Every structure is written in C-alpha cells, then in structure tokens.
Image 1 (tube, helix red, strand yellow):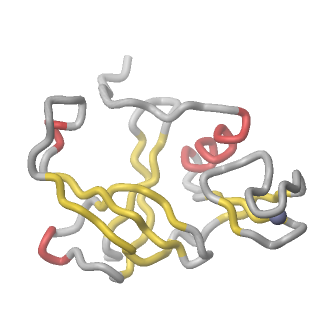
Image 2 (cartoon, rainbow, N blue to C red; image 1 turned 135 degrees about the horizontal axis):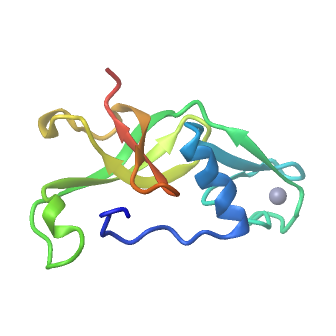
Length: 136
Ligand SMILES: [Zn+2]
C-alpha cells in the first residue's frame, strides 16, 4: 500500500499513454499531423483543428521556468505538510507549457527563465509525476 495522500491524476485511455511514459522515464507530448499544433495536456482531438490525426512524441525533458510561486503556508490539505514548495509553469523547448513542481533546487536559485530539466517522481506503483529541477 502506498502512503501517498495527495490527489492522483485521473487516468483516461489518452492520459494513460502519458503516465505510462513517465513511469518508464519518458516525457511524452502530442503533435497534430494536420495543423502541426503541439498539444499538452494529452487530448484525443486537436484543440487547434479538431483533427484526430495526432501523434505522440518524446520530449527532450528540457525547458525554461515560465513562472512560479513558493507556497509557504497553505490551508489544511494533503499539501500542507509539503510547505514550503514550488508550484511552477515550465515552458518546454518543444513549445508547450506544463504545470509542475520545482524540486531539488535551492529557492534562492529559482528565477523566471532559468533552464530546468525533468525529473520523475514515482509517487505510487502506478503513477510517476514529472517534476523539474535546475540542471546539475
Ligand atoms: Zn490540428
């Protein structure tokens, strides 16, 4: 039994591909083969042109910190024991943004536009979450 208490992602047939990728150390995203739009979070229909002609691609796992906030205090919840923690939006080199956490990085080194790289956090047997850190 996992003692992970926080909410877990909802697994759908589409999101399962993404989370299976994370579990095997691959950060996946999608691209529309008809209009070229880069797609994240995983969809079954292109949000740009409504095409079903979507392919999975593997990200290199590198990007830049678009914006972030450091949460020092939170209302009582499954997250309060993690404070302080960094909630962030990362812009991937492939051109999409992800909401995530910055980990393994000193808070005073965290700045917008800094380079970040993915790290995979296995939170349960089924779910591995992609998080980011300053490259070592
Ligand atoms: Zn499209």
